[in-house]
Length: 322
Image (tube, rainbow, N blue to C red; front, side):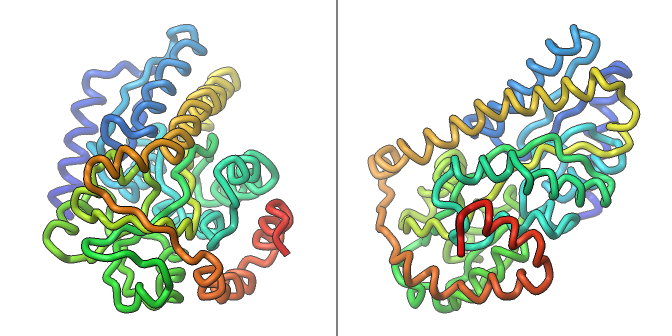
């Protein structure tokens, strides 16, 4: 870990050494082809255009500035200015954001976006600011499904004892413990190697992430569980946020919104079109018994309602859940 942190700092120094004072580092962990990668390039374009060329952006993709947790640390410290991060990593700093991943909370992606763009998103931003971070907006990280090296998991009983990788997110761990699996968090950048070496039997992600990382080539059995949603919060540190003028702040928010439209569109298209592409490349698909999954994970709501009653109530109201 120490060597990796030193490498991150060295990369930061190299970028900063070539940058002017008015340049912004936008870091994320996605590889080319992923909607997050494409949207980050769009963010840089929109932000620079909005500031009239006064501010330019260096995009640092593919976890070159560290994993999601390390990027959040760096953005809080002002080493980088903006990161398109993960809900799981963010929940380690702002636990409430993990509530967006309550099991089977959203019926589809547009329903999730409507909630995040409204009162709930504002509530989460307030809590983030208490932790020194500012949420510029929410991009998408999809409704998630389970992949396995050798079988489908159509029923909760099929998950019993399964070694499954999760994000560093307590909510996801709780969901799979309730389902009888053996979950363990691991950084996204380390996942392919861990699957290939047999550390895990499988993992869970939206189809766009599975396909762009070629995880379906390692774990070809895809069960459409749709067990939870995750966002991609676009985050800056309050130190940078308080140092820029109102016009630049407006540009950062507008760039996040415009790039987010593209990112969400690409995520939706992935959900709609990737299954036949993956099947043509050897992946096998099965549907899950969602009623059985919902019943098995109901206890997760009870746990979080005790700790965050206002936000759980707001989420249930926003989604029409009883």
